[in-house]
Image (cartoon, rainbow, N blue to C red; front, side):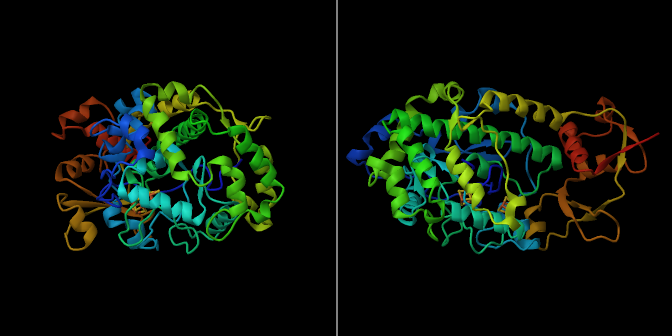
Length: 446
Ligand code: SF4
Ligand code: SF4
């Protein structure tokens, strides 16, 4: 069925924002938890985030994603400064939830791993209490999906009163499953240092991660002895009464009972069982992810279409389903697209380039929070679409980066190795590629 939360969406990134201090605090051993605990290694990398170009991702990416992904040159996203959220400062986002006005689908095995931390364990209890936990993981309802579409149409993402992620600890503003968040949350940067080219790269990585998470959620359910056929039959049956399956908080008791079957009452145990199978097969996750298609209830998906009010129809995104209700793109297909997007990210085009007239340089006065955040940068690039337009964005840069950009001011230059002679920047190519993607440098016909 169509994912109620939409396919490609939002979340938050930085691990200094919303990383709970209790993220790796192991809970006391309980007999029902033995299997997962016994399979986890001391300081297991699955329980800790990894850093790629300064960005934080779930530790399971070390095994779940193709190995080559970790050696790709990731963009360093410096403008999504979650500690000092620019969207909250300048764009009307709520200061508490920021970009977490969204219901991500978080797979069962990620939640099972998260239950190894106090914060994650509490967050699962919250999900169970409000009826937002299904065997596949955190899963919003048809009613919540309509709320999400409504927010989309009202352009109230970031300021929504209705769609608030239950994994966010309202008291602290931290994500309780930061090290276990899904691919959508992990790859969302409200601003990309590489502009549209960067956004496209992250969308491809997000699609890849989401596909893998869905396959592994279903694979691990089967391994745990959960009856997946009965689960999808229950979804098919619920399609006939789709208007009655949602409460304000989550799924109705009746819907939950049908979907959980004999596992009702053992929800957290199933999350941990699924995590245990994924941990046990840690060396084979990429192969497993490509070994079976994602199953969904086509009947439920069709029923979802019937509940969309006419004024929200434009907000609905399609997905590629075949006749059996399976999403047909495989992770390895998407991986190829990731690699192409990555090539585009770092390619130096031919031609001559100049500094855009939309750019001005101003000294960093180091007064407000953002300026202090860039305290090691002496200069701000300020970008406006025209001289009389409001500030579109700004970014702190070093004197060496400033001098390199000034070399393009009114003087067309090609992007080639000759640039290495005019700067002592250690990696001018990375910096200039970012500037190109952000339209700080423009093509110039000569
Ligand atoms: S809106 Fe951007 S900067 Fe703010 S928390 Fe989300 S990703 Fe971070
Ligand atoms: S899971 Fe965490 S990062 Fe994702 S939307 Fe919820 S609180 Fe935000």
